[in-house]
Amino acid sequence: MDRGLRGELLVADSKLRLGATAISEAGQSPDAGSAARTTLAGLDARLALDGTLEVRAETALSSGTGPSQFAYLLEIERHDSRSDVLAYIRSIDGQFGLGQASIPELGRRKLGLDGRLALGSNLSVSASLARDVTLGEPARRDLMQLRGTWQAPGLELRLGLARYADTPGQEQIGQEQSSAVTLIEAGATRRLLDNRLELTATGAIALGDGGSSSWQPPRYRAGMRYAVTSSVRLVADYEMSRSDDSETRTLRAGFEVAPWSGARVTSVLGREQVTEQGKRVFAAYGLAQSVPVGKRLTIDASIDGSRKVGGDAQVTVARTGIAGTATATSRVEDFTAYTLGANWRSGRWSVSSRAELREGSAMARKGLALGAVRQLGEGSIVGFNMTLTDARERSARQAEDDRRTHTRSVNAALSLAHRPDASRFALLAKAELRSDMLRGEEISGEWNGAGIGSATAVTANAASGTVDARSTRLLGAVSANFTPQGRDGEALVQRQEFVLFLAARYGFDRYEGYGLQGTSLVAGADVRIGLGERVEVGAAGTVRRSLRDGTSAFALGPQIGIAPARNAMVVIGYNATGFRDRDFAENRNTRKGLFASVKLKFESAMLAGLGGGR
Image (cartoon, rainbow, N blue to C red; front, top):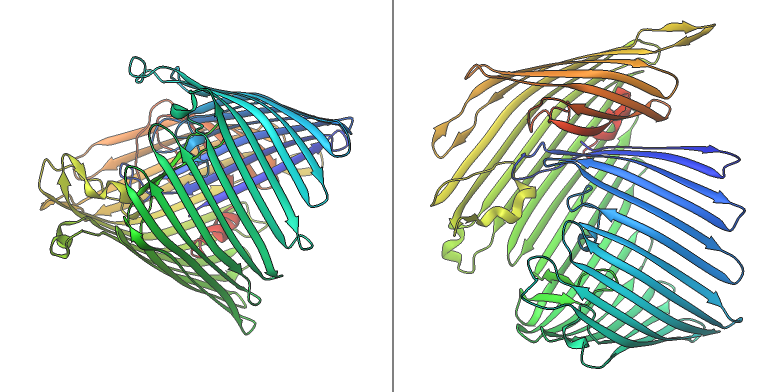
């Protein structure tokens, strides 16, 4: 179950905007299992002055299965009738976030200055200075760029000079020297036929002999987009780049169609050539359709895929990056994916379902999700949710398929929430069955299933041979919340909150033929005291007792909460002592160290999670 919250506060006639965001996402990892949860909390501010100057600041902290990760941003931007200026510094730790950050951005700090000056109605000049630093290493990249742009109706011309410098990291020092290249960059965009046809051409030529080993090699690209009708577009482009390491050529052509309401069709034919790995010709396609069936039922389906027409079916392609980012590398797989979903609403019932099938040359995946919610009355709701995921690694030889990695994960939960609007008491109860399986073989000390962590909750570490690990758990949890009312003058207020959490787990686990069955009990308590309308302080404690071996674990620490909006609280805390438990991570913050989480009223959280995750 995923949860999210966003709140904003406008002050000083809306010139200053303060915001807070909190997200808690259930994930899956080889270390923490299917119940591993990542929590992100962030604060942001925007100050607008005299209509031309704006200052923006953001900071965020994410906490998952590893150490807490940090990110921040500071930008100062100014605009007037002739000029635009942006100064910035951005930093993001290597494991920050919920997977939304672009991989080349992780573990880097960037600072720079961008400026643009209009010299007339058609001509402008722009300049950029930037430094991109790898956190924890001496590696860095520097950019200096000067460019002129001329615009007229239907035409845009660009000409510039850029210098890129690359300083290697610690592990590269002594193996290769710093490199730098100066490029002349040019581009043109032409719009014809009442803007229905758009032609684009760009190119970069190196001055001297420094371009062959640069992270920004000389490159050339030509592209075309043509609107046949308002719903049909033809697209095509060709790109070529060359360095000492490789030469890459990519050709793509296809169309985009919206034939009728609720439908979308895409098709692309491409050809890639990498010097060291040969050629690959591929075709990519997609079709999506959503159809309402009456007032209560909506059905949607999609199909998309990619097929090799010739060459290597799983070539590794390096695509030219842009200024400030690394060159992207991806491993291409032939695949076909299908989805079928349905949503039904009637009265107090809401039901959703979705099935997915992905057949790839390297991996085959299946998935099924079903959710149902029934409102019992004012403030009471019951829900059911089930998900099933199955993934199998494909072998080059069919006879070896039974030796490849196979993972399966099944979760089923029944939940009840009760919190009448005027009540001081709230209750949440949940019963859940979780089952995970991993089978595979080890090659050179690493598991074939290392890349399928999203499909399994089992972590296996056998010395050699094949792995057969299973984990099945039955869980039950009850959380009670009491918020007594008091008076502040003539107004009724709720300045205290008391929470009691009780849970039990029975494990049917088996690993390599050994039974690991046992029962664990968990109890927790929270106390919070409000210091005003938007701030509270408190403490939380949790104890876990294993009846199988008689061991106990504790988590204890203080917390502070800030309310960015009504009925919502962003909580930041620190556990002086703690423990890790994948099954109760979504209920209690028990890991040692700093953490951030979101607190909502029970009915808000249930509505976000009992409908099957949609």
